Amino acid sequence: MRNGLVILLTLFVFLIGCETPQSEKKIISLVPSFDVAADGISVLTIEVDPYEGELDEQLSQFAEPIQDEVLISKLELEGIHAYCLPSSEVKNAIASIGEIVNREIVWHGQMVDWRDIHQRKIPSQGMYISKENVPYFINGGYLSLLARSWLIGREDGLFVYLQTMPTWHVPRSVSLTVDQARTPLQSDVFDDISLELLLKDGEAVLFAVNLPLDKSLSDDPNPETSAYRLGEALMGAPADEEIVSLLVIEANILTRE
Image (cartoon, rainbow, N blue to C red; front, side):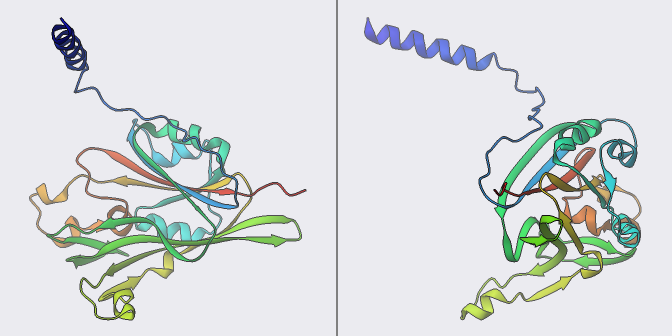
């Protein structure tokens, strides 16, 4: 009798599992939830299935472009849109673009030394990327967005100082000393599109990139047309389907008595 009951229960659980639709699209909640009891930054990485519309028009309802017009032009040339906005508007800004299909949040706190806050491995077959419309072939390594950040006090209050910088590097796979392990075989720093900001508590900076589809399927083999812009490559291009990749850096400053 007991064995028969176990078999029936097992069959019931199996049938329930079979009734779950496997093809249903996975939609993830907009706002991550965790309590932070420290000063510093959090980094939210998001992929969005976009609605129809212009990305700048959608985001401008809730955010403002960073105030450095020269830097804005350089970032947009590489496919990156950069905005500042209140943390309270992050949810609305994302919802205006589309539906979230993937997200990850990491608390970094304060970082005196440079740290990867986003990294993309170059495919084994390599890829063409472009910087300032000049194509380059990269056959390995990683594209990273480095950041450092700490709390500073000014006459008008406390701020989170934030600096970000895209880089590319090929790490050493084998080394005999610690110093060799830390020194990459090859590297490049794109400091002309580095960003420096002072963020108040509850302020955020948002990077948005439209990821292009796979250009290798095109009939045009010209590297200049098949290359992905630096920002697109950094954020994960090519995409299998239309995707907007977002990275949100949010400041958190504890209340002082």
